[in-house]
Amino acid sequence: MELSIEEQTLVATFRALDEFGKKEMLRHASQQQKMEAAASVNGFAVPSGQCRLERGEERPETAAEPIFTE
Image (cartoon, rainbow, N blue to C red; front, side, top):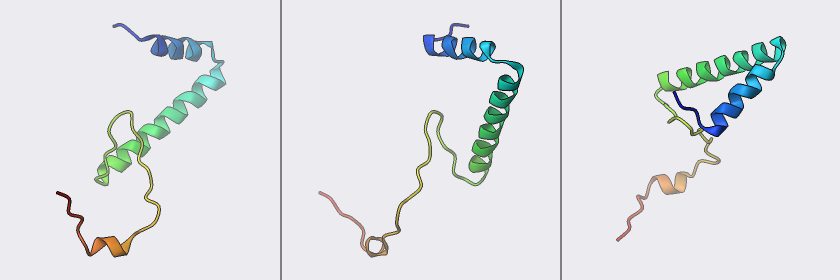
């Protein structure tokens, strides 16, 4: 298995962490994975490498009229 330079750096940094740091990093990764799984169950699957942005304000004036382009 070949790793990119960025992946190799992440592995080396993780190995350099103390025991508490490793546990904290794994806890955070587990929490992120659970959040992504919950989002995909609700029908809002986020593609890999992307994040979901919250919509700012609702615009009811545009909901009634479709936008047509030529």
